[in-house]
Length: 309
Ligand code: NDP
Image (tube, rainbow, N blue to C red; front, side, top):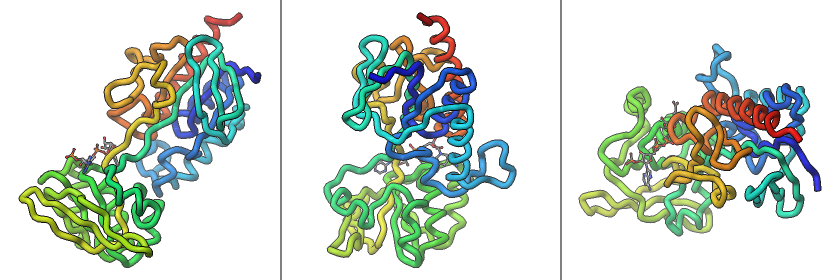
C-alpha cells in the first residue's frame, strides 16, 4: 500500500495553501482534489476581496495560480475523490475512488462545504433542467429570461444581482420579511430595477414540463398560494460542511462543522487537522480558508517532526 507523510483532502484555497506550506517544508504532500478542483470559488466570477489583486482576479485564475504554486514546490496533486476513511489508528487509511488504498501519517481535511437544497421532490426532478445552486455557473443559460433566487443572505443578494445583469427579471423568494444579508448587499438589490422581492414566501413546488422549469408555486405567510412564471430556479440558502466521511472519528458540531482545538487546526484525532469551510461556519471566505490551510500545514509539520520514527 502506498504510504505518505501528509495527505491533504480538498482542492480549494485551504487545501492548496496547506500544500504550498507542507511542500516547501519538504513533507512531500499528496493532495486529492475531489469532485470540484478549485473548490467553491470556481463557481463565481471575479474575486474582488482577495488581498493582492487591486483590480480583482478571475476566480478560476486565482485557484489555478494557487494550484500551480503548490505543484512548483513538489505537491503531488491528484484527481480523485476520497470515498472512505479509517482514522482509528495511525497510519490512517484512506480509500480513493472506492478502490485505491493509501496510508498517511497525517491528514489535513480541507473538503469545504456544499450548497443546501430545499429537499422538495420537484427540486430534485428538475435539477440541472432549470434548478441550480450556482448562478454564476448557470446564469448564462437564462439570458433575457425570468428567474427566481431563493434566500435572503449575502449569497442570494449577490446571485440575484449577477442574474439581474443577464436576465429579464429576477424574483427573490425570501422566507421572512427581512434579509439576513449585509446592508451593502441589500442596498445593491434595492437599487436594481429588475429584481422583485417576494417577502414571507416559501417554495411549495417547482413547476415544469419536459422542457424543464416553467414556474414556482409559492406559499405566503398569510396563506395565499400563487405561481410565478420562471425558467430558472436558483438556490442560495447556505451550505453544509463536507465532513460526513470523517464524522465517525472526528468531532463535529451540531451542523457537522469539524471542531478544531482553540486557535489550532487540530481535531480530536491526533495527526488529523482541519482547514477551511469544513471547520468554519462563521467567516467562510477564500482568504480565511487559505489562512487556516497555512495553520493546518504548520500544525501538521510540527506533528510529523514530533512523531518521527
Ligand atoms: P446565510 O446562512 O447567511 O443565509 C441563508 C439565507 O437563506 C437566509 O436568508 C435564510 O433565511 C435562507 N434560508 C435558509 N434555509 C432556507 C429554506 N429552507 N428556505 C428558504 N430560505 C432559507 O448563507 P449565505 O450563503 O448567504 O452566506 C454565508 C456566509 O458567507 C455569510 O457569512 C455571508 O455573509 C458570507 N458571504 C459573503 C459574501 C460577500 O461578502 N461578498 C458573499 C456571499 C456570502 P433566514 O434568514 O430566515 O434564516
